Length: 267
Image 1: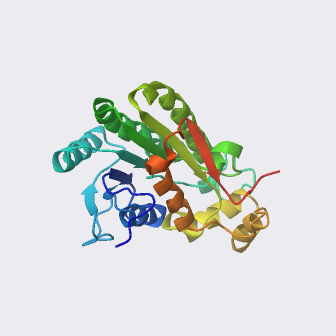
Image 2 (image 1 turned 90 degrees about the vertical axis):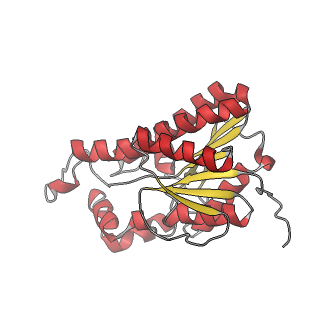
């Protein structure tokens, strides 16, 4: 087997939300580059059953007890933890006020707000804190969190999600300054419009279309027209960036959010 240029062979990597969608591609890419990958997910499935270099662990990122148990199990099995990928996330397109007056269920509720914020912000905090405690002892590590272009520019019909992802970018900058002295890098990645995933299902597209006064069948086309490269991103392209950032080749990248958007802009 030809040695990978990235050479992640001695790295132990945890990917939250690794069972499907973008997380699944991250797990595949990291493992292909030689990393020992732990797919930490609340979903019980066999998406990576019998896959070399991949171990599945059940973890609810919103539960401090569950997160700490997962981290301690990783340390017990592998002796160290080198990279955390905060990938688990949720989205519910919701308007602040349903000024169309036709679908009140698409107006942001307290339950919607709590659900998204608990997973997208609290989950990132709990996982990062538990892992950082181990990395401080090791005096090395990499923490990569998934932000979003919505967190950089805001997204109509996704104010709560946008706020969550903006917080992830702010966490990244602050934690990089706190943890840099321990040789711990902290980076965020902000994808834009990508190929469909389970999170971007038909129900999500219908809700997003309503919040923007659009036909659900035209939402994707509207996005594509704003991307200078003329197409949505591929999940493997984002996963490749994650593998690079996890590697020693990215050893001076910290405290920043990297936009991977095909040059998409709201302007």
